[in-house]
Image (cartoon, rainbow, N blue to C red; front, side, top):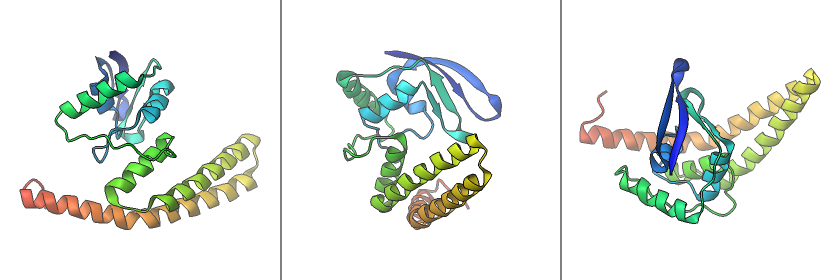
Length: 184
């Protein structure tokens, strides 16, 4: 399976590409972090969207598609053959969105507690919808309240995650220093 896609990065740089599915997935910014390959249900939601926006890290656009079970097994095999240490460890069944996947793999990679993070994320998404609806209706007071609540919830989420993420980075940097690959 060959995928034609436009990859874009910072400062408006765009590149038209055509490659196999494994290389395509590997090139999606932040798709595989902590070496974890996403499950098919998450990949298909992303593939069906036809766009992957990673903010300042760029993104990709393509004609929407989906993969079946056999294609997914082939994809796992080919990603593991890239020699980057990728592995497939299926997340719990309740991990169904791109955001839940991102939070789950962060929890696996850093050790932060997943349930309070998912609970806060649900509230964040609800308040974000309220903020967007208020903005469309021109309800500035409601928009302001929603914005304040979002700020508080995001801060609570980061307060939980930050110590784990910090510890993870310290561990990674110590390992790099030991190997002589990171200089201070």
